[in-house]
Length: 565
Image 1 (cartoon, rainbow, N blue to C red):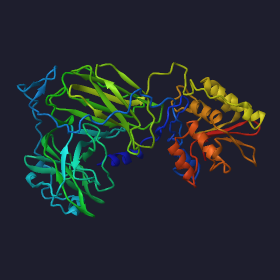
Image 2 (cartoon, rainbow, N blue to C red):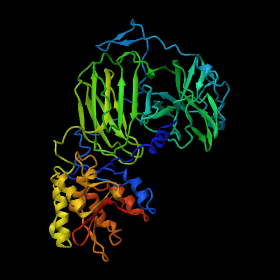
Image 3 (cartoon, rainbow, N blue to C red):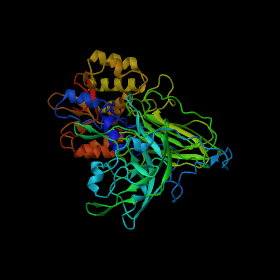
């Protein structure tokens, strides 16, 4: 199962909504997705099914980490796992006399696989690979190509309340050219191949590893279950058998396309991997040391966490996804402990659809708690926490991406500190202007009671009629509605419907301003969309602007506040 497969699996089960990346750092720019609106839109309208991926609001001051973009791994050489017989001491020196942890005593892996079996995608390659083959027959056949492992094995785990099943990944460096598909991890035990990795020929492209990689490194992967233990399914073979606990050799297997449609192989040297009840591990060797910090229990609204533990003989590394941005604005919270308190771990926050990291920073390894600025991303997909530089002395590190706990005192809301003010002179009528100014003033004052009272008095339709005023304007303001109201009414210009006299903000929702440069510039400047989103929506002749809108009737009645329909 690939990273993309995991994303597809939990797209259907999770409340969607993710913050989209903002390109700048103006104090009043904000951007938070209301992806949960999408399902409501489907019930509301038949034409714009699935059109609300960009309903959003840019959060003030995001990505202001106070550091330059973190560099890639600080050496061009691959970082190889250590010797499992060498155990690190508190001062970082090697202690070859300490005995390693005993190996887990599971059954032989050959007892669960089907000897001679070829998964269909392996068979189609015609590369002579099969389950149960002698590992010495696993050779490089691509002339001029080579591949090497780079860093420790780590898990990617999707945990959305069901069975949390990890897949296994490792950084790899490739020489000889660029790969068209991701490398796989091939597992062997006692000289016999027992897993040929996951099918990477189903749209999987090489991605960046999350741990231990240099320039040009790619991520190799294998699934949660061995591809060498098939069972019959209604649509073909199923794979539901995990490899038993035990010690294995793992090799990176890459598939260079030597001629169009013809694939050869490049095979790395083996890495010792231990598989036990806690996961898959490479040897710590002389790295790491004792550790006292502990990862916290998952917080409400947590999206992602990365845990790296090098305090024992075997490294544990796990990237776990638990949600999308549906409440609040997330921040990185982290702790690091190292044999050298002056060490720092460099991290990036990434998404598959983003060409560049959406956030980055450094975590001090002195045991203190680090909290970043707000992190705003884009797209309905998981957030990865990537460690781009981990000094050898680091014994334990954890980082979570979750709505921040600091920065707002009790009674504050998402509009706190905004400098936008409604321009009464721009109102098309006195009644409309009075209502607009009342809404803006209440939002800036974080006055939930006034907004609720106003919406109830006016019979305002909120979020397509799926929420009450008490729900929409509840504090704490996790869904950023207060910021959105101010950004719409004070940050953009309204358009008056010629037939009904209804005023709607932003004006790009009207046919007259559907392709107006200045109107779209307002949307971006107000933080209702990034420039990239605005360009995509403007080019979409069917849907156009799909962000949040607000409407006030000519008599001053607050008509609705929802995504554009």
